[in-house]
Image (cartoon, rainbow, N blue to C red; front, side, top):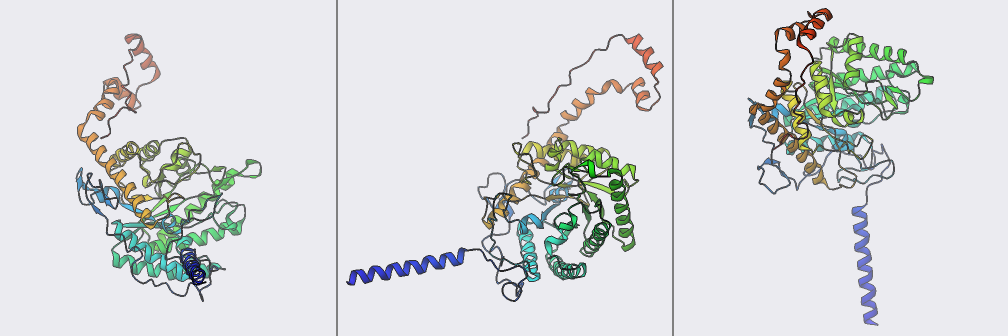
Length: 477
């Protein structure tokens, strides 16, 4: 009898213990905007990341995953500090609003500070976590969408009031932490009103609402000292040309941009406007398909002096290009303004927003950046998210550390290639036939077809030299 009672008691204690673990480990499921119960305070006792130290440079031999192996912020490369070449930024949306959900599965990430609500106080708590994160990571900049940092309201006025309240806290926190906004933007793709687009919507009232939302987003970016403002037209495109007046939509988009430029100047915002090309997803065809398409659009509508491009590497591969190709296209057109540092999976045909880990790709990216003289006032924004299976808080740090180290190593390699000079010499020799009198005439537009025909008769059949193709053979140290 005593043994049976003892067994029952032990089983009862075990059940109580398991129940406690289940309650502690279960995600909060408070209803959205329920401030009375779950979202009653934006305060958080202690640190958001108590087990994470300030990330430091320890060098390539370090085995510490919470340290930099290649990124040494104050080290000078080609006459400029690494932090000034790279100007790293954390994307608020992926880092603090990413849940791990995908079209086939529910969220997998439940950060301890989240209470399950979409309340204003919860938004403020996330903002506090954001500044602790970037401070410990040693990053100087952050980026945001308006509706990611503050909840959408029932009216435009309510949404603006929510945004103002969160932005006031952000200004206080970033002043204290000595951080800056790399760029802000408006989220013009998630709400059902934007199902047909925003600036290219077939509905006039939607066009007007988008203009009002962008107006406010530019204002708060300006208030926070943002150095750039991005336009990403995720739904500025079409699903079918049969029901689309493409010419009219493109004209509307241009008028929208012209109005944005006018308002920017009216309020004295000196930040750079950036267009972020992407070929498709969520639309079948997006109007700013790639860098060349975007450059042509800007030229057609006389906007090249008002905009530059924000090149995202994963978008480059979706359009059938390498990131290096898109950067060079933007650079030689005088339009390279910022880089969204991420990559896609070569086996997956959509925008996976992975952290860049390919050192060869990073080296080519940094060659373009160095040739561009840097990116300022732009930088490298980590528009990248943890994989669905990565659910520990420290994974947020490890992912960013790896991304920062990859680009830092790419910078070191690119500097070596430039200092070595052999790559530049190879290119020079390949085109040396144009470093002649007739070559100069061609490049100056002074060699007509009659002259060139005469020369061919003098020279005979051309001898064509090897290109010394090295695309896949450069030794990236």
